[in-house]
Length: 591
Image (cartoon, rainbow, N blue to C red; front, side):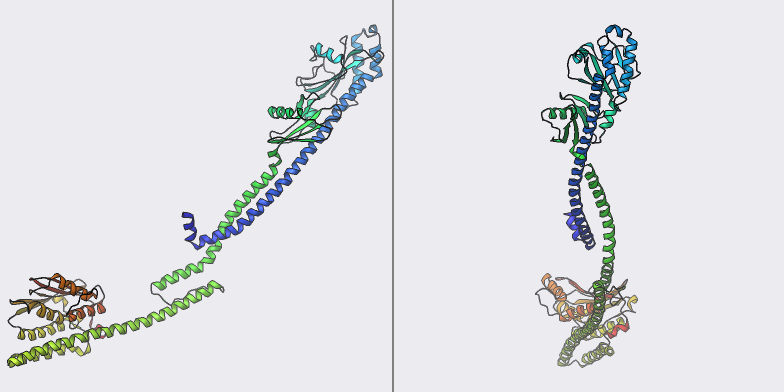
């Protein structure tokens, strides 16, 4: 789940992914095709080369074995040697002279064959003729029984000797020996054996082929015995391959036998029917193609890393204008409009950038127009709410004067009219909606004078003003609706004489104006209805629209964190508290 979120959450990551796929998919497909084609061709080429090596080695071995057979024939038919063999036994009494004469002739014959390392004649009477200067072995490696077996049979016998020459001490130089019966031509009777030897190092050089760590070349005689195999080869591999060849009829042409992990290449040597065989493992045939695969993987890895770096750079290059645009839009969200957005590109992103800047400018213009319109609406609403207060109070005041006139109390009626005149003079305030706090206090004093005349037996009042608030300004006609509400809904309904208190305090950056009475109070339902009416929520209705107007005027002017709150308890009394900022000034009167 994290991988989809990683790519879905970032355009840059998706662009890097797209760039990577666009490069790696074709590269991987091309690399795979190249590898498959090269694997087939390289395997075929390696197989062809291995076949050529076996054929070449078979030809070389054939030449060496043919020389060895030819040397034996040359010795057997040499006139000088036959003369010595046919001479009376008494004439060969001097054994050293006879051996010397045979040795000289063997040296001459040996010189005719470059690959021959040694030629030896071992006669029945023990005379040893040799083409080399090596000393004869005290005990020849060719036993007496082997000697008699070779002497009495026409078929030659081969020996692969790790210990060295059969007849002389050649310092342990490994050889391949061929021993054949030697006969007198005059009688046709065998009289000894001829031994011809070649160095094993020669065979090593002739059969030196790189078929991998486990691959090898080996030589088998007609009896399917292993005569020679590479010194470093695996004996188990050679034995298994020889077993398979024994089960197969191998001709003079190249035979290719398939094993589980390797191929057997074998060919019979024409000279004597021997078999040259090569073991080539299938993995060896694919060595070069594997190297190509490793190079491709390394190249793909480097290309992938370069692609990530380059893709990141290109993605950042393409997304940089979008990032600047995003930051620009965030500033627009914060209220900054019309800032220049540069640099711009002459492409689609550049056109989008220009459109965003143009949009920002238009939004700024619209916001300014909306703000101006909202100010006008707020002012109109404020004045409308305030206008609702004045007729309401005038109606109540005239009702009180009417009541005094009916009672015939001219003195109090005169006082009330005078107080009403002062009240309206302050209330008009030359059209200002925000007045000094002291004017509001004087305004409410005149109101209480009017109400005290009417309800003199029902309440007393007191007013306290914190001196720290004298510099403050407040919206006019705030206290009068609250005092009126206290008189008509709290004190007037109470059977006893009540007390009405107005107190004004400074509270840091705020001022509090509180109207308290100990009248009848409100039950919870009435109090909740009043609160909902001020919040303009719920379905409850209240007749105290003057109080609601006061709260609305305060919040329009100062903000929703300010306004009017009520606390009340049935039978105890009511508190109405106004909270205002102390930062209102006379210049706000033009709101």
